[in-house]
Length: 355
Image (cartoon, rainbow, N blue to C red):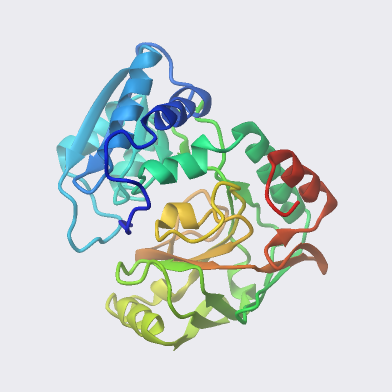
């Protein structure tokens, strides 16, 4: 998503700091080796400062950076297949750093993963986004916190989520496995997303209640940052009713435009815990990691997430702020702050405000 950037427009803005963040991505997260080809994909809306810093970081470890820039889609649709030339380049790369957002979950992405390409996805990433999600964060400690949240979730059978905006959602977690996005790109065919988010596919038909998005919603591109909440009534994993103001109307019409019942299916439930992201920005990949938020997706449920897995016409994600999360009746988070002792300890070690 291309939202209004918080970054200054000049080339010098945090240019030393952003190089350090890019080096984290290249060396510490993706373990790029000398001689490896690093393919950097971007479109004509991408932040050139981030692209240049990433290419320079690849050179610094004696890898071979290649930058592929293609025309942005003006309708801002997601999951658009690339041209054959780009698709072949994705398969040929050792490491792929993706700064646009249309290639994930496409056939070309799947072919690249099958070919052994290691992907780091940072869709629509500008200077501040890379600094917030990577540059300011102790990545090994972030992974440790994510593992702790995952372990608690995987030991549970039931989850309940509430929020001040009106969310009250229950679901079964039994037999399903949560994972976190914060991973290391060592293995061939791995897709690494920005750290600070867990993902769980609850037992689909067990998901019931009210889900309120109040922190962000994208797509459609006309929403992004929200001015009024969107309320969804979920019955057996399907959004049966959408209520609210302007954003709810836009969202409802966007879903209807696909004429695809799977667009109303709840695909996943995620938790955000990146301490560098404390409030909505309008950049979806960053907002999904707002510290303490819950993020839910509708539409396509990707392979490998542990759910039933299906392909819909598109996919959309919305954020719920200041949630409380209960696992088997025990609160691990209350009003946006983790309260489980293990999580509190790790939050203190990360230096998160409020702990």
